[in-house]
Amino acid sequence: MTWDAAWKDALITYLSNPFQNQSIGDFCKEVGISSSTYYRFLVKYEDKIGPLVDKERQKFKSQIRSEAYKCLVKRLSRSDNALKLTFQLLGDLIERSESKTEIIDPEIKKLRIKQLLDTIGNQSQDGSKLSANGPRSDDKPQNVAEPTNDQSSP
Image 1 (cartoon, rainbow, N blue to C red):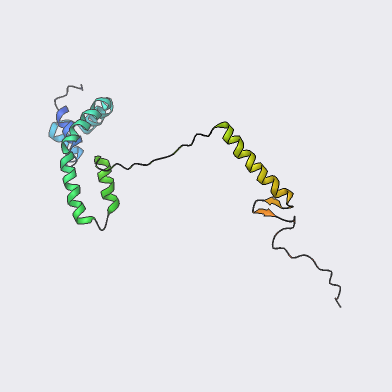
Image 2: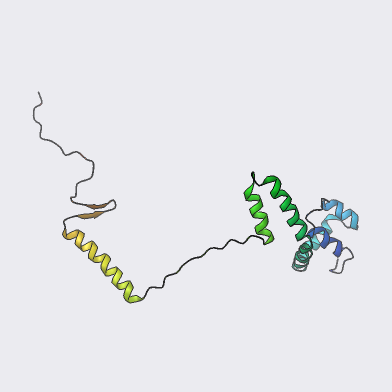
C-alpha cells in the first residue's frame, strides 16, 4: 500500500464530491480494495489526502451555491439558519464585528479611582453605609419588624 496507489485519484474524487451517494463499501468494491485497506490508507496518508480533497472540492463550489440558491427560494420562510450557514461555509456571507479597546493613560486611571473613592467617602460621611444591596442609613436588616414591649398579656 503506497501513496502511488492506482485508486488514489478515484479516492480523492470520492471524498470530495458532496453529491455522490455511493457507500464506502461500494467504492471499495469498485476500485478493488477491502474496506480495512481504505481506512488504513486514510490514516496513513491523511496529511496528503486532506489538501488534495480540499482542492478537488473547489470544483463543486458553484454547484453547491446553485443548490443553495434553489433552496433559498423554496425554504426562505421556513429555515433562515440553514441558509445562513450554507452561505457562511461557501464564503458568500462573512459577518463582521467591531470591538473598541480604550487605552487609559495611568494618570486618567488614577483620577477615576480617586473620584470613586471620594464618592464612597462622601457616602460614609452622610451616615449611610454600603451593603450588597446599596447604601443604607442603619445597620438593621431590611424588612424586619422591631420587637414591641407589649405587656398586656393575660
